Image (cartoon, rainbow, N blue to C red; front, top):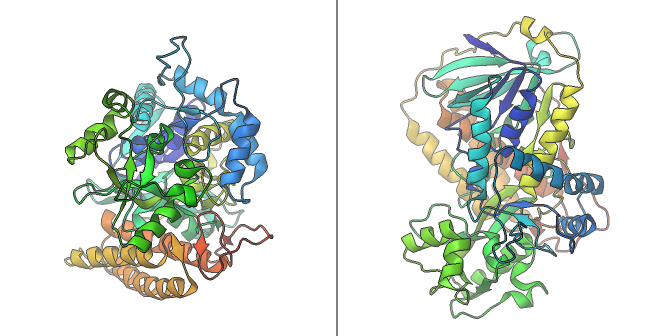
Length: 536
């Protein structure tokens, strides 16, 4: 079996992974694994931007207060302060790497055109129109391509982490690499490294309706869980309030920045409704807005609500939201003259692998950064445009920390066994994967969505437990494929979400349950630990 050795193995090609790789390449050889093309990441689809304080009428204290308020009491305040205060230097670093943010054309003094989004008290969102993520990806990938110390491995899907405990080595447990599947050849390989950085993003595809791309199947959380790393706060799934509702639009997001520029949420008759839910109206935090839309749809029996931006000029909308304008127009919706049909959709995981601001986990040699990690920044609900900021600051802190560690060579001597295929054969029943995939995601949408109850969660737990058993049997009987691995992972993630939701006997932030509508005075994280070693 092919064994690839490197000093640092980075999983994921979004902003957290690319920034990690660029920084670590100053210390040694880096390999990046991305399971599709290098541009396939949640970052590439990010429309909003990066929240960061730079204006004189804004302050770190205000940004911190907004973040803590959105997080509903569950944020780690020390992490919030560190991430918010680290923002300006990270924005400057991005500009040095070639990123260009939108300038304020009205003042024409070289200042930034900062956006405002839900939950923010000031304009502080750096953007590049409504294609911020795509421009970020392009700038960072150019840096990666120019580095002689970085190797990009497209179509490499990580199957499982490899630890010394699993190998039976009598020493302190640490991560020494991972098994990977080359989906172009269907061959298994090993990447061996003393430092493994997981920046694989979220898992929106665990739900039937999501703003995430197809690659977002929670692979990182699932493999960390199988390796025995604690998982925290998985009940807090952020549903973005405004995903475009159209039969031909698979998962297109209408950025929160549209509301930040004055668009209003209305019903089919054009009547605004958010004032009765929150004093901030259409610019309330995402959990409040998503629940309000969900409630309006259920009360009225409507299949969607609408965004009204018709009071803005066509020229403004075309310039500020060129991608959104053109996409909507392609579906027959003119933002300047028509209401935009929207529904909530699974968008972001506030929970994940329990990790420090420097990426460290309970497993030596294994680090988590970006959406896959739960650092304590977001608490029970993420403030808009704080996610890219977190990825920037945390990757920087991780690079600093790893740079102080002695260079490890012992990992190259670790003998790693070939992947065991056993009696597995090539599957001729792919329909089973498709059916289980659909059933699991429908179950999560129906029973573990925006509004929950004990009965719904218990129903979901039973069905997912049965599905996991079927998937496990299928996984053992047949040769692994990317589709099978993704199904295995979303099943593990679904179970973690349900278990976490069942443990929280209150409503807080993104977790709202009709059985426990009040918020408790006692503030606790939901942490799930696994004592047994992972199964391959």
